[in-house]
Length: 392
Image 1 (spheres, rainbow, N blue to C red):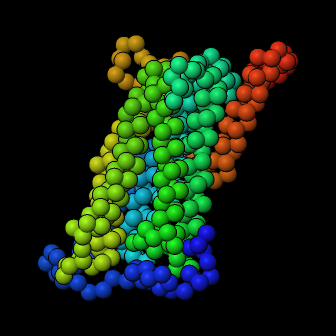
Image 2 (cartoon, rainbow, N blue to C red):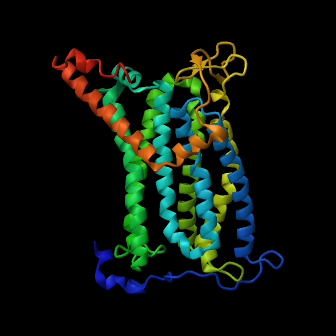
């Protein structure tokens, strides 16, 4: 592509207004003796401390009360989105030159959280491979653009899975490309000119985001009646508010800066306007969103009763006497599986290979099930093949 040409590698090529190395310069105080830069660090730092305390505390409680690893590890990956946003945003405020290098990786973390959310919904409806195959095979889903035609549930699951999985993969590629092109002086955050990488990476990321978000909304709309007792709307709202507000604010600040409503002044430098203020808004809003996440992904449904010490194998069941709550009933006696102080759960969560294993397992399950389904339709599947999920 043109933005990777050798001629563009020189600093200042094509007239990018943003210098390659960003540093805060002196500005007039905005509150007392504090400049906006220092006020931003204080406010955002305080919000970061609150968010880390709340969300890491929630993740820690899931780790120490890990009665259902399949679901709770996914919940920890979803919850990780908030502290990750917060930490990367705070670093960008303190070290403005890191903003362009870190910004793209927030999208990667968002993609991982979105993938984990979809797989968590699948676990709510069917806890293991065998039940997932049986459940989705029994469904007929209306096609989005052709409502009169229907798609088999397994085909729908496969389409959703690929549509969501592409998001973290694409954003990882664009994030690395953003770092490389910035190093070559051809990214240019402020510009939408086609000879800079910024506009192309934004287009690619936006398309990838749209595909993933559309897939998860279609999945929720078609599956919500099968998991009503798990409050999927509350969990979806908690997740999508984080993503939606950040996206909306990016668009809003782009419009305000483009219309010259937000411009550098005596109290706000160019860096404050372009990066400091938008990042500060993200840090502040994550505090109330953290409380919503605490409620939506609370640990109570996974606690083993001290009196009964029993737990459902891998699935929720609604308690008839209290339809407003989720609880664990039935099953066999179990112990928490997070290890002492939840260290084993944290080790599994922090191991990236576990995420890749989950992706591989889902891939194998979906493709083998689809192949068996097609073979069975043609009368070619053997009894041994049709029973392969009995032990899963």
